[in-house]
Image 1: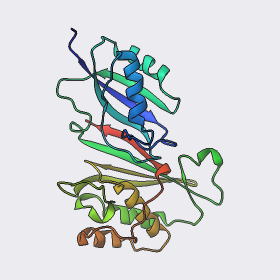
Image 2 (image 1 turned 135 degrees about the vertical axis):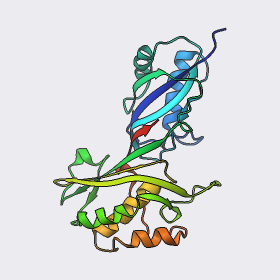
Image 3 (image 1 turned 180 degrees about the vertical axis):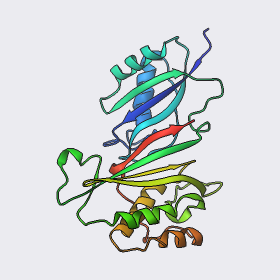
Length: 249
């Protein structure tokens, strides 16, 4: 019997209409459709291990996963074969053989997320699934000052939702948090060693409150130092604006 071989795959997906990455009994997750495509190729069930859990409606450009196959399928052929079985909203962008011990989640050194906001009177309808519309003028400089307070090692409990599971710690390290603007398009780009449940959307939601003048930039520092559970003061930005952009190894 051929011993199973470990593969690494980079997956992009439009999260609209999915319940997120994770397999769920009563909803459709991206993990399920990827495993079904691999089962068709392998002729047996295949477990796919993802780099993280993305929420319902969240998209990905560079989600990573690993899995094992006993059939000797070259990576290039695997990409083509999987994409013939996957829905058009899910694509395997590339695949490779993985080293022994590689784990899509545990081997990750960091992740980059991007969040899209469209600041104008009208949001073009073709952008609706991927951009969050803001009618009000945002103070981008104030948001940049506020975002700088997120950088570093902090307890982010004030900017995360309850994951309904026990966590060892709510301390995370944010490497950088940049905000760029090109006309009506504002992109929030954050990199860190890992993120709590809804942390990125909570941080962006609060930055939008700063941009609207409802909060001071310094309030980010105060909330981080308080390290108290999140309240209604920290809004969660809608899921459709969020992309898991890249996983670093």
